[in-house]
Amino acid sequence: MVQQERDRRGPEPGGDPQEPRHLIEQAPTEVRRRAAEKIFAHEEKLQEKRDKTTVRPGFRERVEEFMRGQWREPVVVLRLSDNGLAFEVPGRREDGTVKGKRLVRRFFWNIIRGVGVAVSYVLYLMHNSAAGKGSTKRVVHVKGPENAMVLDLTDRLRAAKAPWLVCSPSALAIVDTGTTILEPANAPEPQVVWQARDPQAPKVDLRKRTVTWPDGSTFEFLLYGNTESRHLRTFFGPEGTINWTGSA
Image (cartoon, rainbow, N blue to C red):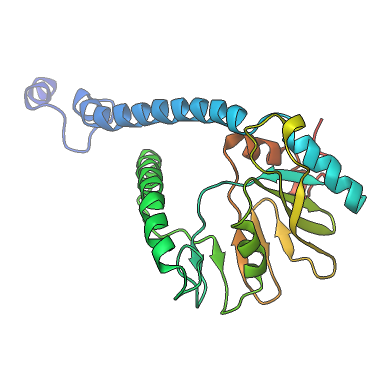
């Protein structure tokens, strides 16, 4: 009789999660999660194709050979993202330009840049929603006091057409190869646009992708897609160490 009464009333609130009612309630969330995973898997495949097209094979090797010849040390070479950096430095706008200068040029640049930022922000929200995150905190890549030491690097970085971050056990540099759409054989020689060596070199944390100067200013560098992220991981050793020759 008790079982018949329970069957007539249906499952109690908060009952077995495998009851049909619970499965039905969970289904929409699971469907959305799977759909989001498919979208981002497709996006990753498109990004890999873009990386191979816009960064031709051979450019990294040219930069590696060029900087090893100068520093006589093993190097890690990473293509940096072309996306704009967000600044939090007194005297600078959010895009890194000096306040009070280049107002007309900045107006038109912000219109173009705003389209890319809007698309990136939508994808960012979709990713966080799929992962169960809801933070909308503004991401800042460059932080520091007024006239921060980091600005020497970032101001030169802004002018590079195809910037590469080059690290060694005792040095750091930004190298510009010019457009990477060309075949490497037809491209100009790599150019060092900024560099620092010990003891003046800032501290680099490749795992956290941050560069820190003595005045506390920091640069969180962005990589050019998943290809660069995977390449960076090949240098990670055990217990937080960096294997400068890379993995086999």
